[in-house]
Image (cartoon, rainbow, N blue to C red; front, side, top):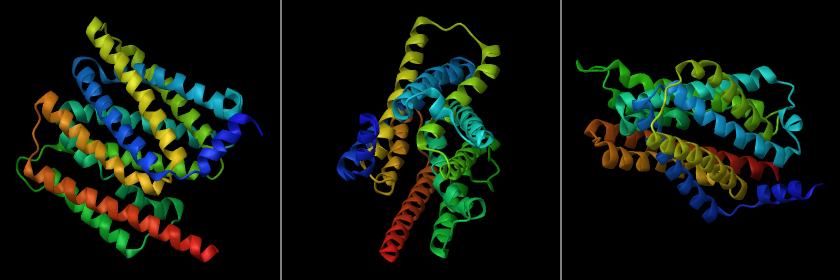
Length: 307
């Protein structure tokens, strides 16, 4: 076994929760900054071009990680389910495009408030898609979460804007992407899925984004460079986070991205938090945290039964 493999295995077996939480908090902050940069650039240039350039740097990072963990690009790309892996990559690219559109239409605060429902969508769809068991408590939490979504969207109000549903579409795409990732993990390593995510997305976005190329100012090229750096840094921090701590222990702290994004939206873009958005987001976060807690409890019960 190689030194890299030994090191990765040792990291995978560790469970340094304080360090994992710290890395998750840093990850959410970096991703919130990335969203702020995306909002600015997408308000000035075509969304497809912005996402395309972002994916070029992301693909380079993915290839470097794949070579490090698998020894070669060919080894990382090897899979017996290429259609599934390609679909995952396309779904994530589409979700990113839709979410950035939501940033420009609704702002960071409301977009993230709705998007936080994606773990509930994952829980709701894990039964029919993956055959996992979803008990009545989690179904109740899912119901509470979607009440929160309805409070935010206010579908019964005469002033309802259909554009408010854009981040809900992004959440659905990301939930399906997450489910397909879990399904792919039954046969492929994480490095393989990560490789296909970046490369497929980069190829797809190049095909569609290159037709919308626009000249950028030198200042915005600087912002684009920061966008690419934050994207790579955020994913690196996330990888390290899951290497040093169990996902169930750190995942609840991912909701801090909503907090950081809201701070950026208010302080930089002059957004405000409406009462219904605050109440709805609170319900969604509470339901999501309960869902994570239930999954962790069931995981511990399964481990005890297996002993």
